[in-house]
Image (cartoon, rainbow, N blue to C red; front, side):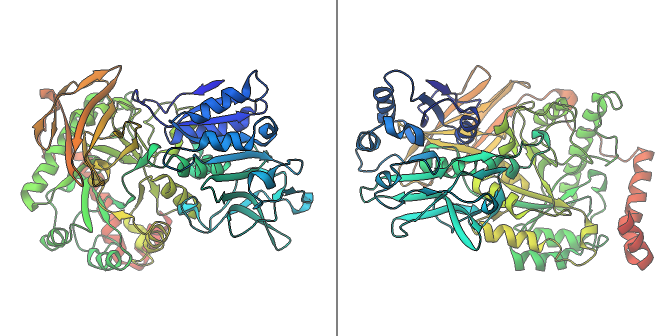
Length: 604
């Protein structure tokens, strides 16, 4: 028997567990199940059916109250009795733990019995009819945001399930062959209220690419049936998010109308039409250049417009590696950026979210620690792994776009809206509850102010409940939660400030934790501005928060800040920065007014 640990870091708690009964060891299959279990914060107990006393061991594990899902290799069905398994999965509330039967081939028997006649068997298909491109079925509580998506998993099915009794069976994944729909993953709901899922054996035909270059969908799709099954089976007992969030950020503009191809009033009309929110990644150098007309527009439409930090002077080497730019220069830039944005607030009344979008590329890890000490909430970039830091080797890291693995500071991943956006990538992120962050530049509107509309409409179609909001609000709502078996909730937070909400009609206790190195040291923690006790254990911050029904509370972590990190001068004494900004403004604003200039910008 093997046990897969929960996702790290993890609190000591009674999390849900997955019991996987294999006929013989299959590392590739175990890896897929393990990835899905880790993604949802579930333990994994693997039992080999050829081991001694397998029946009593398997049934004992299936009976455990923390078992939220059972997976049985089709080859092991002959060693386990159907009624004994179903009886072990039945719970006092008359519900049953969902069961997934995997590794089904044309040689598998007993499918008719285990499905109560809904599936009569698995039949062979000719090699030329086999496909490695699959189609997810209609939307339901299992397929969710993946409904209607097609994907290549790098594997081919050993057969197809049929015939299917449509009264009790729901096709989840299939493919089309010779104009006929074949089913490889089917969900059967029995009259006894038991849920049984059937998955055909999938034989790998391709090797996965480099993890560091993978998108979420590339890693998700080979394990898609297990992801779908475990998300459904675990429900509240698996890691899930508090909602669906999205944001569109435009890098570089200052608040002048228009800014190159960007017309703020015209963009507002597009946002109202398609329902999205735009953040301006504002270069602090421009703190004293805002036009009253644009400022008033931002104030009147805070639900559509917001600001965040975009470096300081936006020089290419501003936050480069320390061999070229010493860390002291990084610190000076951050201090000056904060001072300048404070002046912007004094001049205009506009508040800038403490989110840093680094110019050109993300900074090295120690600079993230400086942001943390300067009370930033997070950083958002096209890479959430710091400059020169090795990419994590564990697959589960790449399934979540927000991480605190570096300096225990929230680093968020965003996508370019100027490049083709695969629909599947959006659907997988939405299925996992990941925030969808997009960015672009004013030049993307050269063809019209509706340039972002197709992405916004696609996101809203995939998940109609998506909340488009500013990056600060997204950072404050970035946490994972799961229900414990004592009815409390584990909450894994990412940012120094978090809005906790109890959506239930009864009071609950949130057991909050966050990876924390205490660099910088924690000065205090407050809940709605009231100081509360906390403790640190093995690099994990822990505290309990009691929540009344339908109540929201704000949790803030306050760090000690060194004197040398407090906001510094906000002036513009750097002649190099002045030249860079002048050239950039000429490119973005002046050239856009002329046909030849617009042509030059497109070439650029």
